Image (cartoon, rainbow, N blue to C red):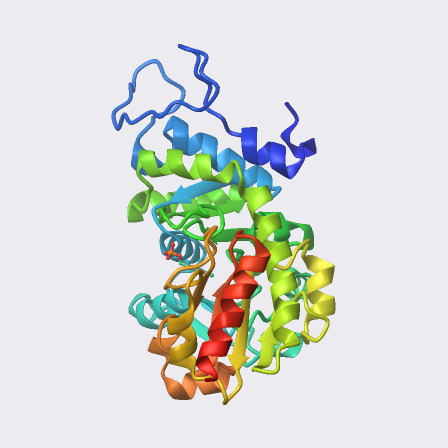
Length: 384
Ligand SMILES: *Cc1c(COP(=O)(O)O)cnc(C)c1O
């Protein structure tokens, strides 16, 4: 089966299935073994070698969705981020990092890299000049994330790959917010795609996992480090993730549709001063987003007007749950200033444009009218 020609729904449902040759069951059997034969076999299998039957199958599904040759599944998004960065950086090397990125990735770079003698610079913004001005002779990696959390800013992937290729620099992207359904960065020349599978790939707020997709050559480099760092995912969670990903494409399309309509509704609401959603024409990066994304995700942020009491608003929500994580089938909401971006501190938040009134909404797949009704009644309660 030529998997490259298959549609995304078919890839999600079928690619990488483990064949049940014994009983001919319709789905992948789960192989829990951590001990495989070493004699008379082509591959030495071991869970921390990232090559058990279920791991291998799932890697194929993720690689196919990202249109790459190979992939790896990790025990968390951060295991995927840290292992990938360490695979391409050694003592004396330099990495240019987009400002802003996911808080955990920021902390990893700032806290761990000095111990390894790896140099880094954060950009001041998202323009070509912002990136090229930070590139040095020893720059080996450019690291980006788009759309970025929580302001949904968009990085120009074609531009990033062009400036990197000129200098032989490897490009890494955190593609978590978009998911491979909305964005396949390899189309624009990006080398390594990283996911927190805890988010859209898992999609039901019950798995912590990570994934990487890239060429065989790049995956080999990451694998060499991965077997030493040991961040593999347990078999049951691998199997659960495969099951979840069968519905990835239909889920993401439902998230996209709901979020776009809700962003428009919030944009027209007098009790909201600003909406950050790349699918809105008023978003400064709308054109760029349209040129590199097929959908605009279920993630959006907005600022409440001063006439709305924020804590009353959050407490009044009945359907939408205040929650740390994101990208599940259920709608959740979070205050970046006191949750996801608390560690940054007030000064850094201000510099990055993350106001204290900002709310980040992860729009779920519930019926849109019910989500809107929930927001509506919370606005009423919070302005009494
Ligand atoms: C959650 C998240 C991560 C980290 O993933 P974990 O699975 O929590 O380790 C990385 N990047 C982005 C964009 C995320 O949202």
